[in-house]
Amino acid sequence: MRYLRDRIISFAATLLLISAVTFFAVNVLPGDPALLILGTEGDPERLASLRQELGLNQPVLIRFAGWLTGMLRGDLGRSIRYSVDIAPLIKNALPVTLLLAVSGVGLALLISIPIGIGCAVRHGSLFETLSLVMTQFGMALPSFWLGLLLINLFALRLGILPPAGYTSGASLILPALALALPRAAVLIRVVRGSVLDALNQDYIRTARSKGLPQYMVLYKHALKNAAVSIAAVSGVQLTQLLGGTIVIEQVFGLPGLGQLLLAAALMRDLPLVQGLVVTSAALILAVNFGLDLVLLSLDPRLRYE
Amino acid sequence: MPRKNLPLWLGVFFAALVLIPTIVSLFYTPFDPVAMRIENQFQPPSSVHWFGTDQYGRDLFSRIMAGGQRSLGISAAAVAVGMFIGGILGAAAGYYGKRLDQLLMRLAEAFHAFPSILLALLAVAILGPGEATVLAAIAIANIPVFMKITRANFMQQGKQEYVLAARAIGASDWRIVTRHILPNCMRMIQVQASASYAAALLAEASLSYLGLGVQPPQPSWGRMLREVQAFGGLAPWTVIFPGMAIALVVLGFNLVADGLRVKGK
Image (cartoon, rainbow over all chains, first blue to last red; front, side, top):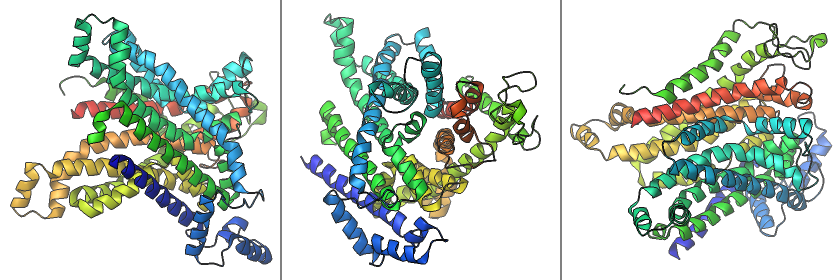
């Protein structure tokens, strides 16, 4: 319980720190945000009204406090370019990104667990060597290039999947695959390493000597202990994707958080950028928090550290 | 060297396959990488145009040679800056410990939770797109990485007897750090630098693909993929070759990192 309390405090403190860094990066670093948004050629009257709208006449700390309390009520302010509230914009884009990130990591796990276990079981075999060589190539592939190649093959040549846009679940297959393959390459190595470690332990020999069949030894005993490192690495991958599907969203024209952020950054819609960055950071921290709990339940020894 | 270090030398080989043509491109390319000849567009690979031509009839081989200049340069500068700042902060945290350590590590955790692409977009919103923005974003993303690794190494080395011995004979902190501890951390820093460089190259390519990094007419691999995206079905070579250049050099530096790691043990 003490551990849990510490984690909650640390979660809140980190989120506050990130909010502060984001707010001051957007509001203080550029000097005058209104000037940044409209450009130096801006009409003085519009500049003045924008300063009014953004509340720039107030001291920066008051604005920060206002923004924070607004966020607690679920109010992220208004987008300058779209002239609408930010919260609904994010709410519409969020499911696309979440689905994409989760299916990317899920697919990576589906690919990597059987291959990784196969490598560990047949340690020293040709299968293992070939798999490890493939993982080196997989890790080097830029996922957006992989996406372009997948579109070329499955959409343009074979015509079996949609090339771009978000119309149905099938629209997510290729993007998820493009995200999954490089991550599966990393995970295969993790699965192989941790299963190999587990297989060398005494309790596996005990399980074998009491006559447990191979699949029980592997899936019930070895994989259970390997699960801690697999969960840790795939959890980190999930957090990276929550802020990092932007390139794949661009390749496949998916209306997720990344597309919204890219447009906001290029149009200098500072309130929207600020809202999106903090939302993504909060998601990432929440997943990290959940990951800690999962790791704790997988390995009770961690509770005493 | 007891055994031949295959990953290291394979890595050097793959990286050289890309690095050497890039260096040569500073003095010589078979064709002008930016000269457009529309009547020449979408030529498939041939003995004249090894990698074919793009939608403006530009020679892809020459463009890929020259495209490495900015990608490799920006990534190298970004990793160097991140390594320098992160190294100093990490050394201070690891060597002096206590309060400073806690403060710095809390900051590093917060930054580490931030995916580098978010950082890059925040930078674009403030500074506008361009090479300097990408460099700054990748450098900042690398600071906590090098900070953590230097700190861990300094903490570990700081407890060793040779440091105690050096202190006993009255060596200054500066001398202990630069002459004694740092040389013992070099291997890990080299491994991290190589892996970080591979990651930085991927990040730079992604950002240029999004149109946030290198701007035309200067060729860059990421930007080239952005421009030919619509023509992938018509002229697949325009998509295949720039991506291969990125993958090859990333593979090379990942293997070098693996090789150095094995060698260090």
